[in-house]
Image 1 (tube, one colour):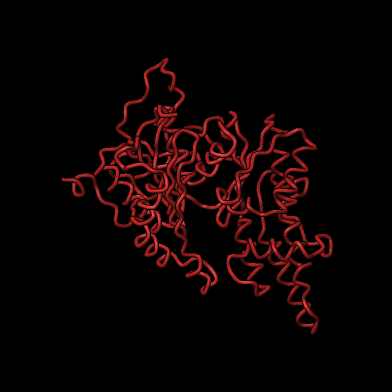
Image 2: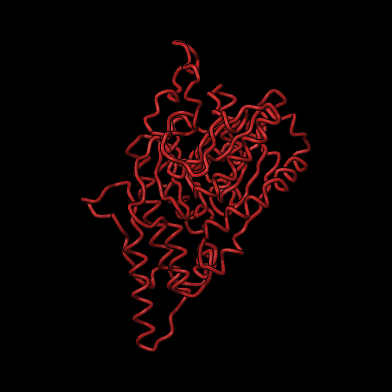
Amino acid sequence: MADEPLVLGIETSCDETGVGIVRGHTLLADAVASSVDTHARFGGVVPEIASRAHLEAMVPTIERALKEAGIAASDLDGIAVTAGPGLAGALLVGVSAAKAYAYALGKPLYGVNHLASHICVDQLEHGALPEPTMALLVSGGHSSLLLAPDITSDVRPLGSTIDDAAGEAFDKVARVLNLGFPGGPVIDKYAREGDPDAIAFPRGLTGPRDAPYDFSFSGLKTAVARWIEAKRNAGEDVPVAHVAASFQEAVTDVLTRKAVRACRDEGVDHLMIGGGVAANSRLRAMAEERCAAAGITLRVPRPKLCTDNGAMVAALGAEMVARNRATSAWDLPADSSLPVTEPHVPDPSAVAPAPGDSDSHDHSHSHSHDHNHDHIHELSRKNLYT
């Protein structure tokens, strides 16, 4: 274990400042400072408030993680940070902090992808990922089916949401029901007391001519809102528990149905579920039932590792170190639209592996995504370090 990479990970893509420390596949520390209570009064995340909260929480959270892990910062083998996707201002705080610590400590820097990190975190729970891995990622910003032959260099999108993500739909339905923010946990709570078959809400993109792996929850959200509005206009009480259970059933039915189909079509016998919505109790239960029936092994991290956290970033960073992936440049940008096909952002000047190298399947030198577009407050290496 002492020979495995010791990496600190920083996550600031949205409203939680996460700092994790991982040695290989072993989690040593997972410190989180959340600003969700501040955003609750607005019914959603306010980017400017999130950025300020990250700025204030960063150093104390890093110090707390180091203390929890029982190590000194100088012991680290590398520092990983979420470079995207996410809120631009929030990402910038994390990327800037990672650069500062890496430069001051003389440690390598790895800018990694938020979505790939959500997949890699499962290594801390269930050991090394099978290759390939099929992953269903569901959160407030993403609903995606991904095939990952190599989590450090080869992640392929099979399907994604064409409108509202699953977590976003949970938040909006909770708002219509006056249940507060965030919507996921409270919908899950009320659904346990309701009948999932009480109301026949629609299942989006499940027709024979629809895209087999894409998701759509906007129509479902609208159907729920109209059903509630009709009840209120008629002067009737809204059965909150039944609405919550029926809505949740519609979401989890579509998610698990498409994920199992993708596994069958691609010949993959493992399914990993991650992202904040993976903490939903009904999604976990339905996925377990359907995977068992299809002969698919289900991997779902514990709820705390499903939501945004620094441990997932550290896990992917440790894998980058272990596989000798190229480090990131000092002018690493915060890229709010970083595609999942780029698990990490290598230094473009890094030398590609020689033919026959054990890591020659690294595609980091041939990314087609343009990182030269304008980034707010981006600083060049020259004016930042000289």
